[in-house]
Length: 580
Ligand code: AMP
Image (tube, rainbow, N blue to C red; front, side):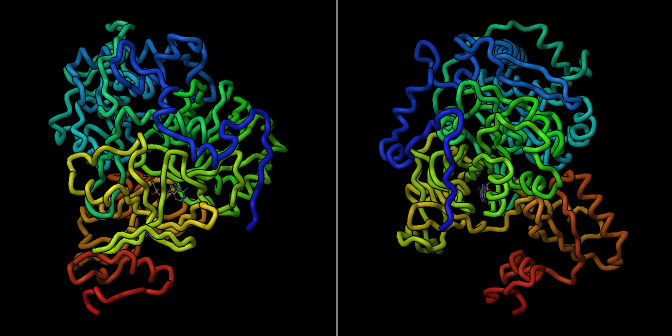
């Protein structure tokens, strides 16, 4: 087995000896590194990430360095974030928000997003950031399922994405616009105007560790997106993984490229760096290779958390980063969201001359669960080993059997022993679905993996039909439901088709209603319909017309068969196929 042994550079790694740390680790011990609210009022993420620094030595330290689209910069100190989030919490009080109400944002990566996040957490509301690239339909699904009471957005996004769905959202009480100076009407209000009216002081009310804090939607194979609810206690995982995996040190300049609309962008783009008192770069713009390299150089990034899609894009470009840019400050690169294949690991290591550490986790786990570590030999292509405090296993699961496989090298379901702090508390309003994720003390992740004899985990694939495109989960049902709304479509099925850059591409198979001609114009029209409703990140990029969809006798679409046929792979067990 070829291993890469990275030599420690610059700062000494926080995790020196994985095995001994893993053996002696307890969450209770790590809890001592958190502060907790004064006077025994409990544990609140916003206090840990912002207030304790703002009222302590890091008061004037930059919490967020915001890089605008035009590359100009705004530095926001812990003190700034403290006062602004206090004001936002007071705005929520003014609007009648109470504990457990949901506050949504539909924003690009602008400071108001971060202010709203911490203001909502301070108010003990539940914060849910939505990806601003979503079309009106995914936005509607999430706002309505999450019982959104308040939405913070911009005028442009409001006009394009909210007005078409507003009358279907009776529970939405206020829309707060970040970029208008006067109210539009009684319920669509100017956020700056409201902020001006409020005090910069706010006392966080008592917060229990298991009070709901964050809501993230994730896709399922059946049904619409599920809302995974996280609690304030999750901050302990963020603190620990920031220290042990991201290897954060006080003077780091840290950059997580994920949007907060996805869980990585919240757990590691907002909370983990700030809990660890480290400056976090927020870039308003989307991926652009030259821009990204310039940001790494100009802002002297030391720790960079990104995704395989971005790495694959960079691999394809004719840029020699370390020759064309001064990246001498870069100490560590991390990757999550999809498999980081061995060739990508080697490319990054050779190109940047720093370690790249793949790690695994998902919306439900709230934080990194399996990872490579700076001071542990990397086996390219492996996700690494469980975080100290986390027990991972491989299980054989059938309808009537659950068995942990102790033999190494065998593929099975990746399962985690419950008990880590950031484990999701519920799927919103879906008790049965939540219960099905567990067997006794084990949480079933929905992924297939194997473990080698030295304890490294290797990703095999998803156990279901969920598509990972550009690192984002897309549930086939959501896309199919939208396609079916097109007048010409009788039935639809979508699959993830492997793609060298974006991991998987959403491909749709369409059965037309009789009387419709399966031509190029209709194809484009259906794709345009999906892009308008779902947004380009979710809509299919390829579409094919077929006579009928393969289904089981009980009527379920056999997406895996469509996929096997598309890729010329063995069709597997067809005993349940309707017409077989
Ligand atoms: P999400 O809930 O959107 O964060 O997606 C989580 C899913 O992404 C996991 O269940 C895996 O299927 C996939 N995933 C995340 N990280 C990795 C990784 N390092 N290697 C392979 N797959 C990953």
